[in-house]
Length: 301
Ligand code: 13P
Ligand code: SF4
Image (cartoon, rainbow, N blue to C red; front, top):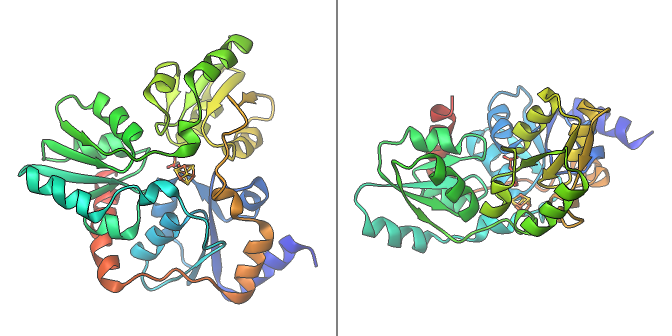
């Protein structure tokens, strides 16, 4: 039996829904039941009927699914697929800033560990960060861990006072303004679509800034035919599926997240066979991390 057929059969037998992020390999996106950006995936995880979730993405995504659905079993396609940015802020650093401000909200990008979420006031994703932070009553915002996303949000909300952390995504940071300028010279009529994890100089050269889903939606609705894409290469799969006649260009060969690419069809099949590795969290961490995630889902509506 073909691998894809085996996957479908086991899914049915074991009551498993497969969720995948746009950065995983196209072959994995193709077999997934739901593919999306971080916000969509955290929302959809609360709506699926199946008893078991198989997550094709990095650890913090599987953690969010478990935090929001303690009664479900969350299996990771690859438990070593982890986002380095998720580990770039510590509980102690958050406590230090909390001690300095009375009127403070700790805003935690979902790309963070469950332990960090558990000591934060609200979570955000790249698609809802501006809306969520705008709705907070606190004036001072400690934005962790991603500095680039924090600065992008701060620019849109001058009424707030931001304290930034120095976390970053190595994939988006490797997209350089000088390389983007060179790509624009080669494709002068292409629109530049950029993820807000990119640096400010790349964002300044862009026509549109948004999450992976927002980039895909923008390109799909646009009348333009050529686009330079400043985010991880995985989005090219959905971009091309939805827009077979449009042309998409990268800025360089480093737009590649090695952790997302650890997820393969073979590992999906293996995880379905064994129903392992299972995402587990200490219950106190899960309960405390659930509050900022649920608050995000509420404020982002
Ligand atoms: P979004 O899919 O929410 O845009 O997130 C991008 C990302 O870096 C996930 O790791
Ligand atoms: Fe983390 Fe960046 Fe990879 Fe997303 S693309 S998982 S932020 S390293």
